[in-house]
Image 1 (cartoon, rainbow, N blue to C red):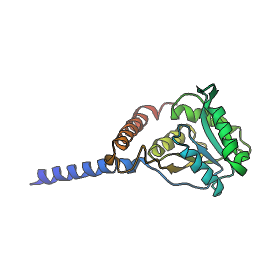
Image 2: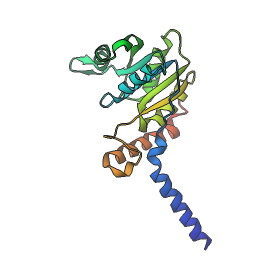
Image 3: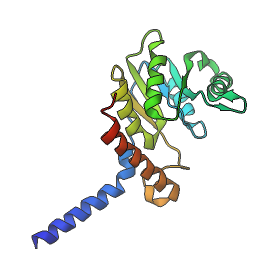
Image 4: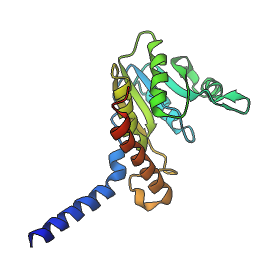
Length: 195
C-alpha cells in the first residue's frame, strides 16, 4: 500500500510542478530605485511603455533603455530607439538614456549595461528591471550574478501574444515557457558560476 501512496504523491507533485511552471518564471516585485532598466528584445514596445509608466509613477528619476547595435533599414536599433524616445517620452525624455548593447544575450547585455550604469551621475545603487514576465526570474538571476553591486527588483511586462502563466492553454505560450525553462536551467547549471 505504501508504494502506491508514494507513487500517487510523486505524480501529484509532478503535475502540480508542471502546471505551476509558467507562474514560477514570473517575478513581479517593483521597488523604488535609483534607475529603471528596460532590457532590449521588446515586442510591441511593451517593456518601454511599462518603464515610462513606472518613471511617471516616481519609481525612479532616470531610465536606461537597452538597444542593440545591430542595423536595420540603414540605422542601428539604438538610433531608432533614440528617435522613438524623443518622439514619445514627452517631458520625461531628458530622464531617459539609451544603452547600446552588443549581441542578443542577457549575459552580454548585463556587461554592456554595467558600463552604462557606471557612467551615470550620481551612480545608482539600486535598479528596477523591466522585462517580459516569463524572462524576469532568469534576468534577475543573471543581473544579480553579473552586477551584484546593484540591488535589483523587477517589474514584469505581460504580453498575451507570447506568454501566459497558464502556459498549456496556447501553443505559443507553451513554446515560450519551454524555451525559457531551457534557458533558465542552462544558466543555473552551466553558466552562473562562470565570470
